[in-house]
Length: 235
Image (cartoon, rainbow, N blue to C red; front, side, top):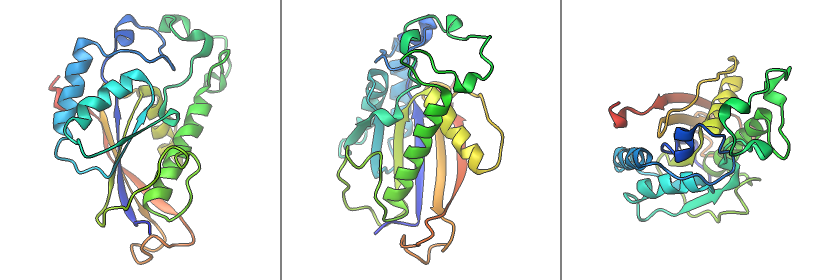
């Protein structure tokens, strides 16, 4: 049976060598810089006492490396690696300087899709799919379309579960835009800082806890309670 409340914690990976070089990393693995490793360790310390029910992580190297420093404090947790949480695919632009990846002649930058790559609307659809599936897993007893083939679910804790997602700046931007769309707000271009944390509280909006996750309407409310917070870095 699903639960009526949950928290979704989202964190960006630590600084990478590619970030320092200013290149479009996209679906390339990437590697944390020395500073990025330290950032990931500090993030791990900050999250050490947070009780997570599940962890999802982009299957790219820089997020896996970041997650390893967080999971050091949660050795009992298994992580599910998934392409759903990947950065925006740059296709032919990957590995090139960021300054060369912006085409000012494009009328609608959000729908521009480079050769063999993704547009921002594609990433937003992935973000919406991930949100829908996480809600299905923890708020309503529904089948999930994106994660179900990558993970067999275990029994859920009785209290409000916390789910952690380790991902990328571009994905987080579009997840926030999906949230803002739900709230009737405009788009945001703010980029998550390295190892910045976002927290979203989600619950059944129809039954207010009475349904115990069996509400047929399957409608939910979502509130962002933490945004782009990297105070653990003391920068």
